[in-house]
Every structure is written in C-alpha cells, then in structure tokens.
Image (cartoon, helix red, strand yellow):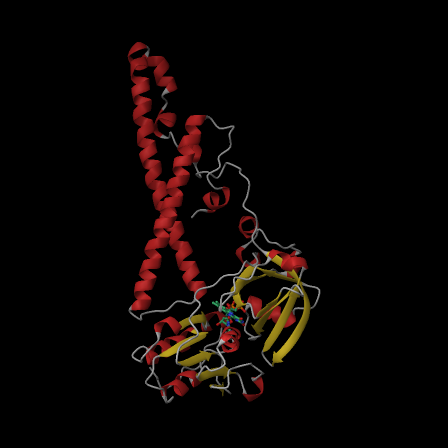
Length: 400
Ligand SMILES: Cc1cc2nc3c(=O)[nH]c(=O)nc-3n(C[C@H](O)[C@H](O)[C@H](O)COP(=O)(O)OP(=O)(O)OC[C@H]3O[C@@H](n4cnc5c(N)ncnc54)[C@H](O)[C@@H]3O)c2cc1C
C-alpha cells in the first residue's frame, strides 16, 4: 500500500471539485484493493510454502515480503485504474469536444492541445500525494525505563513504567510481543516517532528501527512492564541499544501483538528456545498447569548464562550451553531433540529460536505424534553473517 494512501486514507480535500474528487477516490479505492490483493496472494503463498516445509522466513522477513507485495499490488491496481479512468476521460473529452470541433476547429485546437488531450490524469501524479488529510494517530506507547536487571552475561531485563502504562493494553496472549523502537540519540528525535514522515525526511539508516520483543510481564498495579533483551554484541540496533540503555530513557513500544496461543493441555510438551525465544518459552513454562509433563531445551551461551525460570515440576529444564559456537550456528537443541526419548502420547511442541534451529526442530518433529493445537514453532531471528562482515566457518557435518 502506498504511503500516500495508507496515511491519508480516503479523505480528499473538500476544496477539490466533485469530479476530481471522485477520480481520486476511485484511485484510492483501487490502490487499497490492490494492496489487499497483493498481501493476500503473498500470504497464501507463504502459508503454502510453510505447509510444504520449504523456506521458513522469520517475522521481519515475512513482514518485509508482505509489505513489498502490498506495494506491488497497490502499484499494479493504481496503474490499471489510472488507465481505465484515463481512457474514460479521453472518450468523454472527445465526445464533449467533437461538436465544438466542427463548429470552430481553431478554438478547439487550442483547447484540445496534445498536452491536455493525452494526459487527463497527469495532475494526479503522484496519485493522492498532493492532498493533505489528517494523519492517523501514531501508535506507540512511550514509557520510561525505571530499572535494568542483568539476567545473565548476555541478557538484560528492562523495566519500563508510565502512568496508565502510556495507554499500553495487554492482549493476554501467551506469546504477547511488541515492536521496540530505537532511534539514534544523536538525532534528538522525540518519541512517539512518526516513522512514515521520518522516512521522507531522513536517510534510511537514520529512521528509527523496530524489532519484535516478548512482553515478559505486565504489572498493571505498578504500571510497569518488562522485556528481556539478548545483548548479542553484533551490530544490531535494538540489542545494542538494550546493552547501553539507562534508567530515565524512553522505552518506546507498539501496541501488543500475538501470532498464536497454543493450548496448554497437551499430555507432554517439548519446549525449545535460544536466548531470543527464552522469554516466550519462560512465559509458557509459567503458564503450564502444575501437573504438566515435558522437557524444555534451552540453548544459552555458556553454563553461567542460566537463570531462574519458574516451571512445573514435571517439566525438566535442560540448559544447553553452546560454548564456543556462536549464536545461530549451534546444533545443541537439534542434537538433544534427536536423542530425546518421547512418549507415544501426542506431544505439544513450542519452539522459538534462530531460523536454522527452527527448521531443524520442524524437520525432526514433523513425523512425530504431534498435538497440533498445542504446537507452535516459529523463527525469531535470522543469522546474517554477510552484514557482520565476518565469514564464520561452516560446520563440517550437516545434521539435517
Ligand atoms: C515474536 C518475536 C518475539 C521476540 N522476542 C524477543 C525477546 O523477548 N528478546 C530478544 O532478545 N529477542 C526477541 N526476538 C528476536 C529479536 O526480534 C531479534 O533478535 C532481532 O533481530 C534483534 O534485533 P537487533 O536490532 O538487535 O539486531 P538485527 O539488526 O536484527 O541484527 C543484527 C545482527 O545481529 C544478529 N542477531 C540478531 N538477533 C540476534 C540474537 N538474538 N542473537 C545473536 N545474534 C543476533 C543478526 O544475525 C545480525 O547479524 C523476538 C522475535 C520475534 C519474532
């Protein structure tokens, strides 16, 4: 969907003549419908691909792809609509112009110049971009960091507070997450950030970035919430910000989101996560009924990276240090999973980790006796070696 449509909506200034307004509204509707169609087709293709167990994109890649499909859909629909309107305007222009041509060809020749004859829609380029309408409210909640707790060498818990949680409302989903927005402090931007306006004003690398993070807990009595961040040391925006954040600074988050809330009544659970998925899996562990049975495979940097996580007695926590292997290149979860003795009863699998780990988990569990209602496996991040400027050695043994 084009920025113009999305943020200006159907509203078109009332100062515009009725005929032009109608044209603009038709273009806006086409643009919106095209965006929807592009989105729907891409989404269906993605689901098919996941169903066939092909490539699994992580959330950010999925969002980028769907946004591109929206843009492509809206551009195609807009082009088609412009052609139709253009044709209609030309023929109505011709039929209005013809009687005059026979009456006074010279006058008509000046009125029907090649310019205004051939480009009846030229004034609408770029479509709708010239028309100002009230912007949608910027949907961000701006809290203030009140405390920071070091959970392990590479995880910090940031606690933010605000009167009435700055309007943030929990959606109570098990995997409740938000986008955390981070801006370069040197730019002096004041949140909430009008990302779409800033995209026009600033170079791409200066526009505030946002990444998905699990809401670890919300305390409505104290008007506080917390998020656990992996401080991964790579040149990531949000991880880097979390490593250096200080009390008093803003914590800028989107409204609550959720992808799935698997049921918690399976007879046996296999839970798995690396540090990025750990907050979400910790929430599952806390929410499982006291009699739940299962195992949680938790990948961490090293033995000293473990920390307290509440869990039912029947769910065994298996901390898996990857030691010298870098995050995203370890096979500890897959190796543990392949040798895990599993009951014959249907099992629920809930797993969130780096994309290749998630692919391996999918591969290993897909032929098992899965309780699908209690299963949700999704990639939380993707190792990008190219962007690091480092070429880490590949493992010589291919496990899957
Ligand atoms: C629904 C959902 C919930 C999530 N919840 C949490 C959460 O509660 N806590 C959390 O820490 N993460 C969570 N994540 C993962 C987080 O969004 C990603 O790790 C994100 O890419 C981090 O952004 P960044 O700006 O720090 O790094 P990016 O700019 O995305 O990446 C920069 C570099 O860092 C590497 N990198 C990115 N993430 C990691 C990582 N976790 N470990 C090691 N290297 C990494 C990349 O390969 C890349 O090379 C969640 C993701 C999803 C989809």
